[in-house]
Length: 236
Ligand code: HEC
Ligand code: HEC
Ligand code: HEC
Ligand code: HEC
Ligand code: HEC
Ligand code: HEC
Image 1: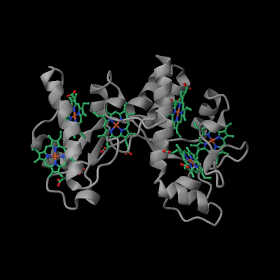
Image 2 (image 1 turned 180 degrees about the vertical axis):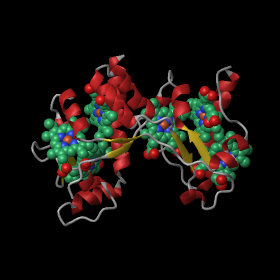
Image 3 (image 1 turned 45 degrees about the vertical axis):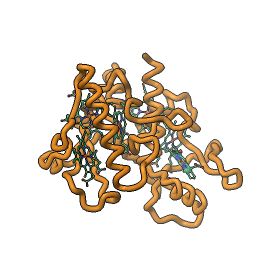
Image 4 (image 1 turned 60 degrees about the horizontal axis):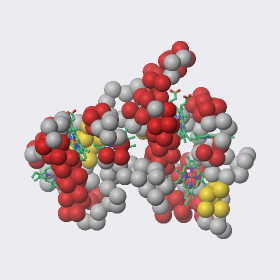
């Protein structure tokens, strides 16, 4: 399996930043491929709650990104010990148990809305039905999807001055750590596509990625989005 394409769901604004910063006609033509009008996700953890008592919650991520532009992504996403923002959920750890998860979302979402209301700033839903809305619950998520092809690979390699190790690694089984050896760059899917069937070669690597649930989605968000956020900070 030699799949070069990597399809990644990224935050619209982060990508948008880079599109806006590009001024050459060449990159302007590229804008078409990754432009997405909406960025809304569904929060409905049936794997935790079973059958939901209330309609699932449609969360307009794009709207929140805009509204919290000055405060930044870290007004909701916390950083790990390496200083990278964690995106898979908005808590420093995923609480255990139905009630705890419900309380955690309610306290995180509603407290920001009420605090902003009190401070006279723009604010969001406070009553049950505004979030648990039957009509909104019927809508499907809509996300910017981006294909990282040879063109973008090349662009990154140039921009990042051939530092392949910023993205590529292999795993040292003895020292149990990531290493980089020039000339051995391989597809991320070999180790981070947790559902694919594999031959005998990468058994120990996949054991680790499976244990830590390092899916393509998770590692891509971790690596790609955090570097973009850092680059956009240092450019400002
Ligand atoms: C600001 C938005 C918001 C408001 C306001 C809100 N909730 Fe929620 N609620 C959520 C989110 C997000 C979850 C997590 C849903 C999930 O993970 O599936 C949740 C989870 C729940 C759950 C557990 C999941 C389920 O449906 O069984 C219940 C029950 C619930 N809320 C009831 C209420 C009630 C009752 C109110 C009003 C007193 C309320 N909520 C107000 C956002 C909100
Ligand atoms: C107002 C709160 C808020 C802000 C601000 C915010 N996010 Fe999010 N983000 C969320 C929520 C809620 C989720 C869904 C995760 C969950 O249910 O806990 C999410 C999910 C994501 C995901 C998808 C994660 C996954 O595994 O599906 C990415 C990527 C992401 N956010 C990036 C960003 C970036 C980049 C910024 C800043 C430009 C940002 N977010 C700003 C609340 C926010
Ligand atoms: C850090 C602050 C903050 C957090 C955390 C936050 N919100 Fe909001 N929310 C806002 C602001 C600000 C607005 C108003 C945006 C606007 O109208 O420009 C808003 C608006 C909304 C709206 C109404 C707009 C719409 O149609 O989507 C809903 C619904 C909502 N938020 C749900 C949620 C849910 C669910 C969560 C938790 C998963 C959440 N919010 C967490 C700041 C926050
Ligand atoms: C910005 C991150 C990034 C940088 C920097 C980078 N790569 Fe990649 N590379 C990727 C991604 C993502 C893929 C696609 C992987 C996939 O499809 O699984 C890839 C794919 C590859 C592949 C194809 C692997 C296969 O089996 O299909 C090779 C070879 C490769 N890169 C070599 C390099 C070399 C050599 C450098 C340095 C000159 C480099 N890369 C720099 C992210 C990067
Ligand atoms: C040979 C197998 C292998 C390949 C190929 C591989 N990885 Fe990994 N990767 C791992 C293992 C194993 C870990 C976990 C290491 C640990 O935590 O001890 C990891 C960890 C990561 C992490 C850190 C995740 C976290 O949250 O801690 C990121 C980010 C990542 N990989 C991205 C990539 C990207 C992007 C590519 C392709 C350019 C790639 N990996 C290719 C095996 C691989
Ligand atoms: C180590 C830092 C770094 C990593 C990791 C990284 N990027 Fe980038 N990315 C950049 C920089 C810097 C730019 C701006 C490039 C330029 O100005 O030419 C960029 C630009 C982009 C753009 C906009 C390009 C354009 O021409 O409009 C996209 C899309 C993108 N990256 C996707 C990704 C994806 C997907 C990944 C993960 C596989 C990734 N990036 C990983 C640094 C990084």
